[in-house]
Amino acid sequence: MKLPRLSIINVESDYIMKNDEDIIRSIIEQNEISKDYTSKLKVFKKYIKTNRRNCGNIILELDPTLFNTILENGIIKIGWRQCTVYEYIGITQCYKCARFNHLARDCKNEITCVKCSGKHNSKECEENRNKCVNCVYANQKTKLNLPTDHTAHDKQCPCYLRMVTKEQGKIERSQ
Image (cartoon, rainbow, N blue to C red):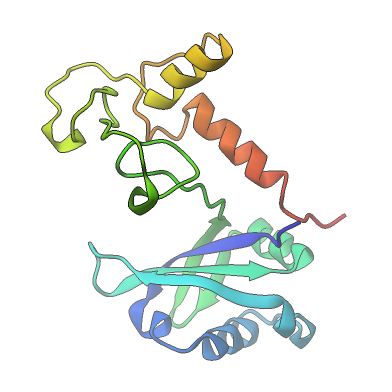
C-alpha cells in the first residue's frame, strides 16, 4: 500500500525553491501539526507553474490520519498564503498516444490525437467531434459500450475514472 498524497496548490515560488526539510518544517510550524508527524511527511514532488512564474505546486506524501485532517480542512498555510489542497492521484498518460500507464519517451505506439483519436498530432487536428481513443480501445477489447464522445484528457472519461479508482485502492487509508 502507498501512503496518500496531497497536492498543495499555488505555493509561492520562494517556498518551492527551499529544500524539502525547510518546507516540511514550515508546514508543521505554520499549521500546528504535531512534531510526531515529521518523519511521516515527505515532499514527493514540487514544481513551478510555467504559466505563472511566482507560484507552483507541492505534492506531499503523508500519514493517512494527517492526510484526512488536512484534506477535511481544505487549506494549508505555507508562507504568506493559505493554499488549497486536494488528494493527488498520479495517473500517467502518454502525450504521444494518449494511453495510460506509460510516458511518451517509452511509447511504442503510433501518434494519436487526444481530441479525435486520429493518427495525427493533436495540434494539427481539424476534426469538429471528440472521440476518446481509450474508450474506443476498451469497447473493442472488452465489448463494453462506453461513450466515446469526449477527449482522451477528459476528467469524466470512464477509462480515466477507472484508473483513478484502481489507484485509490492502492492507497493506505486511516481507520
